[in-house]
Length: 111
Image 1 (tube, rainbow, N blue to C red):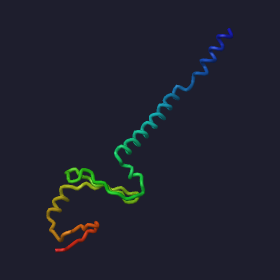
Image 2 (image 1 turned 90 degrees about the horizontal axis):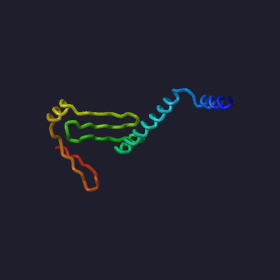
Image 3 (image 1 turned 135 degrees about the vertical axis):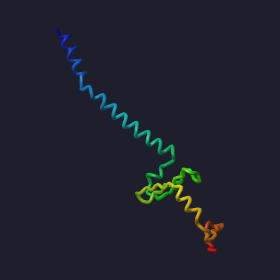
Image 4 (image 1 turned 60 degrees about the vertical axis):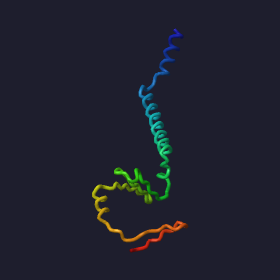
């Protein structure tokens, strides 16, 4: 009889809340998701998003789906040129010429 009682007590100790396994899986999934996000940011060289510096990123420059992303302080702006904006640019007129000197200085000369 003693053997039977010891075995029953051993099984009762292993029993627990069956949902505790689900909680552990949720924790593992959260850690995995955060690790994937960090790996993506590092892989895409987008670490400047987390700095305090202002920056500008141009995606697909010169193409139809070009996007300009700027960060000013804590505000991030996304600008996508539309067809109307490009039509307005064609209606402009030339007002001067800009020259870049050897030292990097730019000089504007109006016409």
